[in-house]
Amino acid sequence: MDPKRIDRPGVDLALPGAIGFAVLLYLSFAAALFNDGDTSWHIAAGRWMLDRAAIPDADPFSLTHFGQAWTAHEWLAEIVMAAAFDLGSWNALSLLFATAVAATLVIIGLEARRCANAPATVAAIMIGVFIILVPYIVARPHLLAWPLLAIWTVALLRAREADRAPAPAWALLMLAWANLHGSFLFGLLLILPFALEALIAGTRRMATIIAWGTFAPLSLPAAMVTPHGIEGLLFPFKVSAMSSLPLIAEWRPTVLAENPGFELVLIGAFPFALYKGLRVPPVRLLLLALLLHMAFAHVRHQAVLAIV
Image (cartoon, helix red, strand yellow):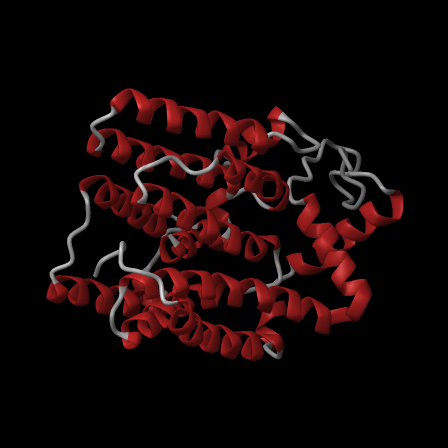
C-alpha cells in the first residue's frame, strides 16, 4: 500500500460511490434511525431557535431545570434538524442523516482507494467501518459531525503526505464543526500527533514548527466562534467530568460480548494487517493505541476509531 500513488478519479469514485449510494438508500428507509429519545427534543430545540431567531442560554423546556443555564453547543445541528423536519417531516430527516453517513463512508472509501490496489480491500474497509457505525446511526447531531471528522483527518493525512502543514483555509472547517457537535475538540487534538510526526520526520525543523504552529492557532480561535465563546470550548471537558456519565449507555465501557460488530471487525482487521505486513509509523501507532483505548473506555468512541 502506497499513499503516494497517483490518483485515478474515474476508478476511485466508482466503488466508494456505489457503496455510499447503497448505504444512502438503506438508511433512508431505516426505522432504526429514530430509535433514540433525543431526536425529538433536538428538533424541538431547533424549532424554538427558528421561531425566536435566538439561541437559548437557559433551559426553556424541562420541569426540574427550567431557567437554569444551558450551553446549547449543538445549536446549528438542531436548527438543521428542525428545518429538515419542517420541510419534509420524518422522510426529510431520514434523508439528512442517511446522507451524512453515506458521505462519511465515501470520503473514507476515496482515501482508501488511493492506497489500496485491490477494490475488495476498499470495499472491506468501507463495510467494516459501516458495521462499527451501525449501532450509533441515530438521528442526532453526532452524525452530522462524522463527515467533518473524516474530511479533517484526510486533510491532515494529505498535508503529511506533501510534507507540509494543512492550508490555513482548513481551519475554517472548525467554524461549522464547533457549532454542530462537541467532537470538534477531538479534531483540534488530532492536529498534535501529525504535527509531532512532521517535526520528527522533517529536516527543516524551524519551518515545520512555523507551519504547524500557524495552523493550530488558526484552528483554535475558529473553534471558539460560537455563541458561547470560551465556554463552548470548555464544554466537552465539563461533559466528560460529569458524575452521571457511567449511567449513560453510550459512555459505558465497551464489552465485546455486547458489541459483536465491533469485535468482528477487530478480529478481521488485525490478522489482515499482520498478514499483509503493514507498517505503521511510530506516532500513528501511538495514535491508534489511543483510539483503541478510547473505544474500549467509552462505547461511543468506537465510531471515532473506525472513522479515523
